Image (cartoon, rainbow, N blue to C red; front, side, top):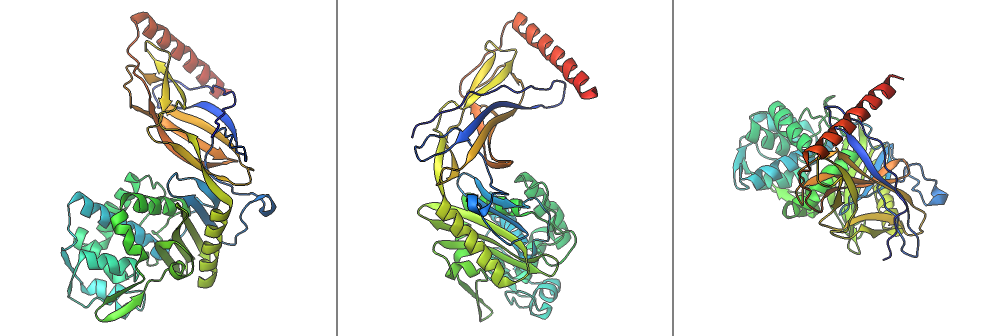
Length: 419
């Protein structure tokens, strides 16, 4: 594939003691049938149907390509809503991570307390794995009950087994882990998504969580595709309607509360491409399934993967402070890819964003910032970039000149901000 980058412009930067986010490279991107491509990142919100946009009814929705993280469509993606049982993905991730770290084992057994049985079991009348009161159930089976049967009792038992009670689990386990994963808006009050004002997530952060589970826990992700699970001699079907309705569908989770409406996190693979869809706030369970399926089909039909930069190919440069060189070349050890519309209608902009100038010395492989690709007003893809070369410390004179330059620029910036 031919690759062309239009002339880029340097953007100004701020100075002072605070960390600065500098936009160092901007390139308008166009993708056509010829294969020429000039850079990219994430989303087509607002595109008209006749221009290749998606026409959907969900109040909040997002469609993401799993490998690159490219956002193909979004609608009110950062609006906080009740996630209902989709929040069980966070509980599952906490358990997956604990098993991976060795702090718990799959064959560990947790007791089904009266609280778990009454609030999440058969007496509650909600989704349950029908775990018997005071019985001991392995972590492995509780995970299956929580994921396949959406068992509220299973989630409570996991929370109580790991943290002592749900409140501690929600605050010290779920919230802490969410922040580690970059989910900055999500809040949790319990382990299962049962109605509580403290349970809030966005469809964007649900898609980020789903992508993380798919990519980082493939051995556990298989559970989401299991179509049934039997516990206490009661066989229940997986609640995900996509599993039987769409080729390649293998996850993840549905949800419903009166406050949040009907929602779904779904994923499917076709022709080697995996897409993740999240919808929330619909009024009917059939609409939820139809909307998710329609969005996935639209994505598979209209998008394809293109490479922006090959592995180790120079992506751009970052300014260096006090170095023997004034800048450092940036690259990625893996190819940087983005999903683009097959009809060539995308107009994309790529920018390198970093905190800087980067202080010398700079080591090869040192993470410097990220490359972000915009599709219209929305980010389509984001990936880290690293120093492709070493930059040693400059002379005393070089450092003095850079220091004076930063001081002048900082004064200019401060004066401009007062205007």
